[in-house]
Amino acid sequence: MKVVKGLLRIAICDDDKVIGSEIESLVLEYQQIIHTEFEIEVFESGLEFYAYLGKGNLVDLIFLDIEMDEMDGIEIGEKIRVEMNDHRTNIIYVSGKEGYDRKLFDFQPLHFLTKPIEKKKIFADLELALKLFKKNNQVFSFKTGHDMNRIPMNDILYFESKGRKVRIVTLDQEVYFYGTIDGVLQELPKNHFIQIHRAYIVNYNHVKVFSSDKVIMENNKCLSIGQKRRQVVREIQLKISREMTSWI
Image (cartoon, rainbow, N blue to C red; front, top):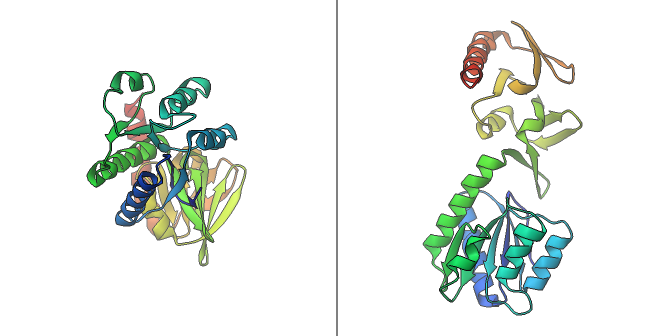
């Protein structure tokens, strides 16, 4: 089993080493094209992969071979959806044969790929899986050393610039990584995160009190609004309030 740390957790399970290696190479190629990193794990048997899941490990996307000895892809799909009650993980079935559509329907696969593997189809599936992941699992990703870390955006109270580092503050932890506030802002969704100061970006959902020159966060921390940003912050606050009201 080989592991590459990264954003989307991808498992490749195929007892044909050539096919498994081919899919892995295409995944690595795609991540270079889009300038991101995936966490890739390769398994050469259904039993090995099932044992991995049984230890509580999670994956976001599986390229799963159907025809495997001892435990095939259909059995694994049933265990994921029925036994583990996991309907979040996306499954892409891979097979050299046709005629599985009806059997696979119950396991809600993202796609069905036939061998030989086509690059454009792998890339299209990765693009779709990444869109679904970002939609359903909005997280802020950052590196510490060689490790890629993820924090759910809903958990983040604010970001603070501290020299060459950025501090992420949640209700129960503080984390530091090398970066800039400008770089952080580009990675955040446009709604609900507001840069109130050259040193602070706050999550609007965790602001207890908004005044003309400061905010008080859920952890009772008082943060100043930069004088040059007060008018802009006020406009953004009103825009977010109108958007939230429109949904009520």
